[in-house]
Length: 250
Length: 305
Image 1 (tube, rainbow over the protein chains, first blue to last red):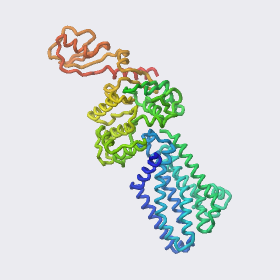
Image 2 (cartoon, chains in turn purple, orange):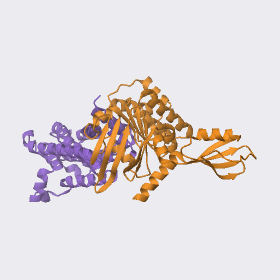
Image 3 (cartoon, rainbow over the protein chains, first blue to last red):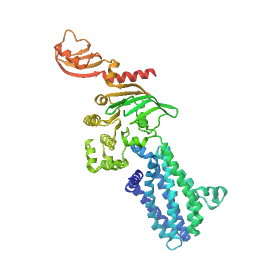
Image 4 (tube, each protein chain N blue to C red):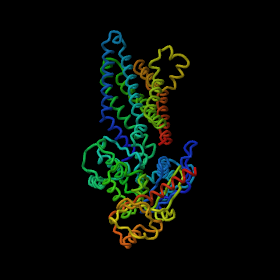
């Protein structure tokens, strides 16, 4: 079996079978349940347009997926180093790229489960409205590169910083920075700097696409540039992770 | 030749960690790499295993350059690193199977059980590695190092955490690998007893520099160190004179503290004492030999620097 798949299977299995992984999925379920309950039952929030509600759920799932990816990524190499299991892995006939892509297995498994878990919630809040199918498809298409990009970023920082805590902290700050469009008001995002930031920010690309597709019913052809931004993000973070792995201090 | 290191230097940042390391290891030989803490032993291992490229100098392991032919090298060597970490949630059997797959080796259940039992572990145990003691983890680490049937074993403190019986068992395994299978072993250790029992050749590193290297017998004779022994002799018996080369240092009841000159084999010394009509009931080594050699070598180095 290819070493990448072997490592990925181990990482995915470890996450999903461990208390850590199950606790994360339970937390996700609780967050999504509370959010959806508020969206359909709260007096003010229930007045939101159906598509608006689906858009909010999609943004939340992407943000939580990115958060899970950086938590797992930050532990990927630095955690193994701290537990003493990294050196045996480095001494096996495996290339740094194979280790990095294998390590992404945990994030891929976590994201797939999160995505599947979010579908009933998306359906629950959006089944009576328009563009539900598009919402499900675009969450996979745009959410995946954004989330896995954060996974690579976590792995890269884990290799660069050599310790879980600083890697996690730096990844979290980066996530907060890139996810800030969710927190900023529309007027700030319309400023020159806001628009420039939106144009190159993969998180914004995904969120703006969800807005464009689900709320404004715009076609895929209008999302090409944003999709390219998410792909560039994925490729750049992957290259950063591989380079960091090669330069990792043992 | 399995390993040849010549004039190895390694700088980490501005700090020269290795300054002049030299080492030669042949097939079937057990080589003891000795030195005080922080001397550069583990760093030398990281260079010969390709984890760090050398700054200057020549390093050839199994005819390969570890820095550029890393994967080929990793397929042919087995390493037990100082920090032997595992995936603690796996059982030992599952872990070895996973590691074997990483090497693209197919091992069936019976082979895994045999390998674990050879190391003194229960091959069928479903217990997670997290429940293992330090000694059991060392044994598992050694089993892992042997998974790919390596031509060269590199072991960093392999008997660390083992009880005397466990150490003896691991010694026997290493001697078997060396003598019967021709595997070369680079043994990095603090325990001179391990070296005394296993190694034929040693290198002593201090402050990133090889200060002594060669066959133990040659080094001991060149060093001209005297050996000191405590012997218990027949009560009340005192010969008029001791044989040449044997000096009585102190006497306390039946116990004598004697020094034997380096050119005399201990067995010959005991024989000559017996010829003098002295009955020897017990012999204990007090100092000299490898320990003396190590102490004087590292002491001289520290004074020189």
